[in-house]
Length: 196
Image (tube, rainbow, N blue to C red; front, side):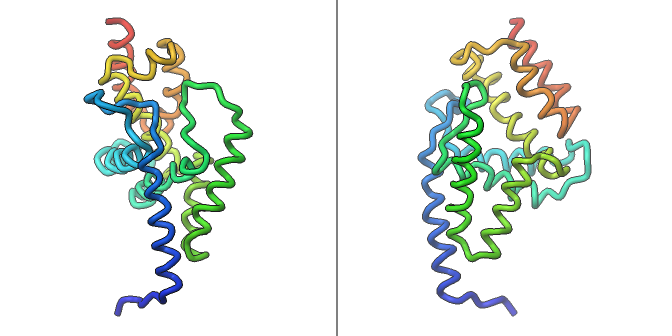
């Protein structure tokens, strides 16, 4: 028989679900592939979950795809309070980390305690990128904007005056840690872009 939730639990869950609607208003640097506008962080998270679902067999290590998808759906929720942290911009990493930690406490704290702690632990795991699930999730988080930049003739690379070597440094180790086969393919796409 299904578990019946009390009104207080549902109230907290609804409050969290209403609050995370704000992720749709966090505009990222990456353009949509059709270049009609920039994507928002909610769209990015959904797209990453689809990347995980479709590319799960590309992981170099055994993964739990449900956990990977959960990580990808929640990994940027902290941007509601802390803002986006573009890879090609210089930021105060300590201040950004503190802002994200504070955001994680507030946002996951809206949920019933056990549920909030579970999601916050997944967020920490993603950030640390030490488990197989987190390593693969991080690799996809780095892969998706790379694919967008190749598909949009440079996208944020042009805006940030990013070199071929910088792309290899900023993307290569993270993507290849999750899937060497994906990195082997996409670095060919990157080379084609920079040597066209």
